[in-house]
Amino acid sequence: MISLTDTQKIGMGLTGFGVFFLFFGMILFFDKALLAIGNVLFVAGLAFVIGLERTFRFFFQKHKMKATGFFLGGVFVVLIGWPLIGMIFEIYGFFLLFRGFFPVVIGFIRRVPVLGSLLNLPGIRSTT
Image (cartoon, rainbow, N blue to C red; front, side):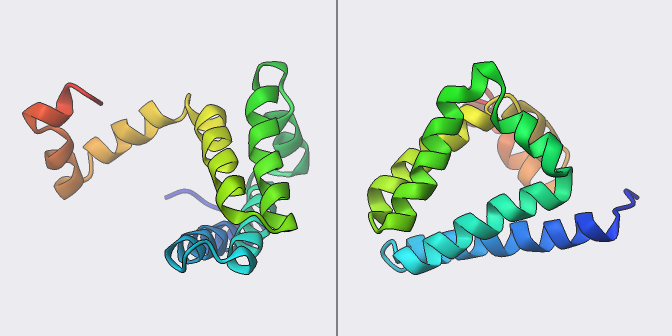
């Protein structure tokens, strides 16, 4: 079992609520208030989970500046009131930022009982 500090537990909650608000904002036809709340909660939760210094180092690595620009630029565009364009920027920046982490997530999901059997189907196995 992984032990989390109280700060990391708060960060997990903030991140979870952020993802919920982002998802709910997209379901409700890109409601800019929900998307803005989700963005703020997600970034704040990330900072609580891994710490301010590590968050800053993660986002501002030299080879991730383009991804950071798209992600944080998308957050800004959502905050000023253009949610659809901002979410497109954010999603592109998110995939650029976390593309090195996706193989780890897929490897973890392959070990989950029901989802693992779905990812190991012949047509899907070759694409992941």
